[in-house]
Length: 169
Ligand code: S3P
Image 1 (cartoon, rainbow, N blue to C red):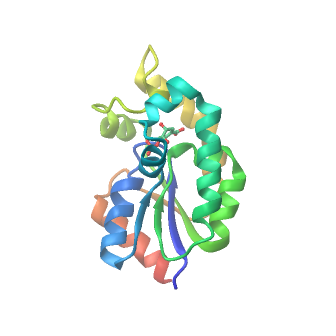
Image 2 (cartoon, helix red, strand yellow):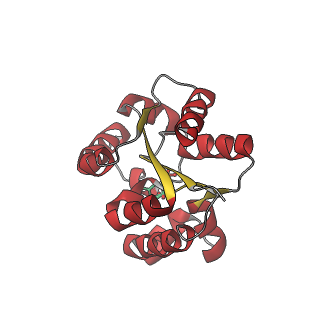
Image 3 (cartoon, rainbow, N blue to C red):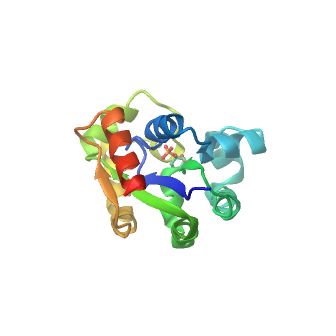
């Protein structure tokens, strides 16, 4: 069995697209944590936030992290807020290679501009401002992850190439 590959990073840094590509190329199972949570709860992430609250969602993420980090061979894309509980990152690091994808705020805005399913960015006001504020609040949490790939000027395929190279190295 091979250790997990876990792609952490802010919304719009390419986690899901790249993780799916890496999983296909390495012929490994792809796990999108938000999708799995939606399936198990029978609710969209935005409805979970609206009806049950963010702490409830964070607890679901925590429990799922504990479950997934006990298995191997998977390529995992957690939601962007997984770093809010540093125990999630240490759990994933025990059985997996944890890589942080980063991108500049303009690129993030561009990539998620047409999406409406991210409750933390759907508040009134300027989306760019929400992105910058949240990035700033979480900066030290993302920076604490030593392996990082700046995806700003790379295609998903190029990012996947780098992730695979890191996983082989
Ligand atoms: C969140 C990111 C989202 C999703 C939820 C909260 C966050 O996932 O888990 O909306 O706190 O950054 P993506 O990073 O896949 O958009």
